[in-house]
Image (cartoon, rainbow, N blue to C red; front, side, top):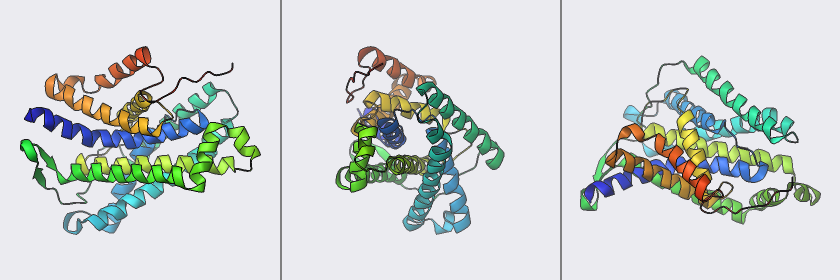
Amino acid sequence: MQELFQQLANGIAWGSIYALIALGYTMVYGILRLINFAHGDVYMVGAFAAYYIASATGAGGARASLPMALLVLLGAMLVSALLGMLIEFFAYRPVRRSSRLTALITAIGVSLFLENAGLRLFGADPKFFPQLIPPRRITLAGGVIVTNHQITVVAVSILLMIALTLFIQRTRTGKAMRAVAFNRDAASLMGIPVNRIITITFAIGSALAAAAGVLVGLTNPKIEPLMGIMPGIKAFVAAVLGGIGSIPGAVIGGLVMGVSEYLVVGYVSSTYRDAIAFVILILVLLIRPAGLLGRNVAEKV
């Protein structure tokens, strides 16, 4: 039983990271009906932005502290938010009225561009992320051992998810985002600046991906330019599992993905850790294509 609780604790921490990335997928899809396959690479850029900000400010090592970690986190989120806005403006806005296949190919092209640009700028060798917070092991009830980094990951993820929910439900911009997601043309006729709302959506989703990149750097301090490929795919599966377009669904899907991974590692084999994502995707498409919290919507052809 202790082994089960240990794997659940590890899975919840890792699933929180998947949930943050999945939120970006589901927000963009909810408004544009576009799968932003470059989102995993924005997560990679966020991790590298945090690495270079930490190096420039001297965060980590002797200066490791929570305030310095927050400074690095906010800086990385800002960099990725700006990157998301640039991607939307230069890559996706010109093809917004084109076919979905055109937008899909554009998303794949942006992903490949970011990966190769990362290899060129950052180098192919892995970088070791600085210890922004001094590591410490904590023993919970039942003999479950977690680290303060894992607790930080879960706490920061919960705070960001709550902040996103409050922003969407309580602010004028959040209400405008819901209106654009419901009907873009009608929202435009009602005076809502659709282009600005879409840009804000990309900025928020990209910032959340950057936060995930920083949190990964805390728990797994090795980053490289291709680190966003597999987490991006798994986060997409998490968004589909929860019901793409549903923010609570993205959170649930991320947690299910993380827990499933660690259960497979603990009770089957670490060899199948990545395969479980595709097994879950196939099962969802066969049993409930709309996802756990998604709704089947009839589309006019």
